[in-house]
Length: 249
Image: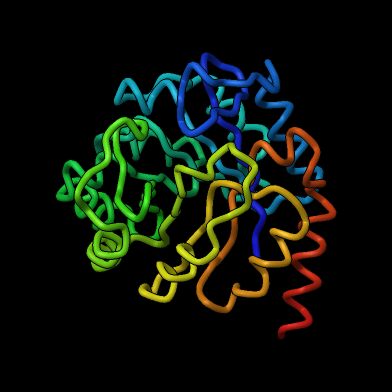
């Protein structure tokens, strides 16, 4: 199981939000490139980037620092990015810069034809990000909860050809309350493509609990606040996840 460090970018800084609120941002570093190198050196095998400004603006807003991160670590591990991706030209630009996966969230829900076209144009490089509150998908930076159930929508997007699904429980994100394992497993069991969990990972017990259900189709988990604030020592957590996987093999 992959532990995937998150670098959320706001105004060129590495931040974390509480439940997606831009005015609830905690700045962890003024040098996101240094942060990316740190996680690589700690043994990360994938990196998760979010252009928060881009997510709200609907177009890339932290392009320079994203380019610098990819130049620093993109040849060492896959990097995935979401936020502000609304057209095929943007996807092509990012992939040409060295990005491995693009994450399409709000645009997938609002204009599913765009997601379908993206999967056709860039096979095996498109991840769909579904954020949910009480099982219902939220969009526009979590400002609006739709009437789409996350499982039903994920099944539809799986048929489009997405390589995986990132599932975020809004109520858990940034709150340090633990991952919503039941909802994540339910989604993973409904799909053939893997699910990446997001939101709430807090400590080594959460890693143990997730590793116990990894065979249910959970490929990894994105972790942010816990590794920045120290409740989850990243290198130790990834080693634990690897050891548990070997025991199950």
